[in-house]
Image (cartoon, rainbow, N blue to C red; front, side, top):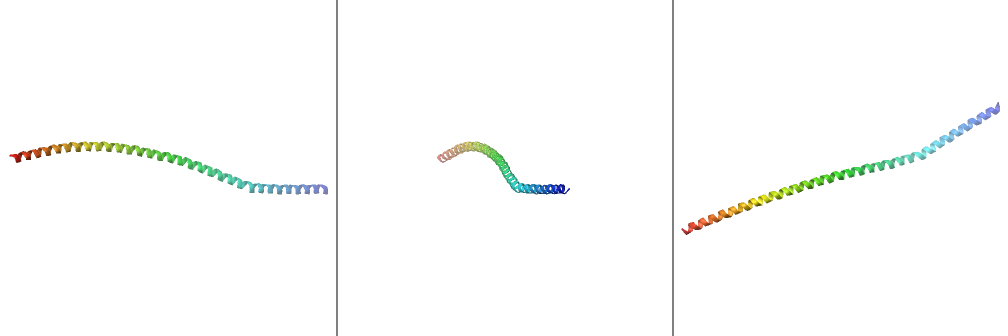
Length: 117
């Protein structure tokens, strides 16, 4: 029976040694893998952030360009309307100037006629 007890004790000892090796292996793996997993997560998070930021920049640039294009169109419309208004004012001023010149001619002619008499 003593032999069986010894064998049982040896088996128990081997089980304990196997458990210790397993615990050591788990701890080693944890120490080695956790930093790798954390680094991988950091790299992936950075890549995702850059991707999201890139998409946001593209969208922002599109919106900015749309606003600039619209502002250019509006400025062109305003310029066109201003030119039309300026042409109208110039035509009106020319007509009024011609009428004023004619009126001045008549007035001078009348005064000259009055001085002759």
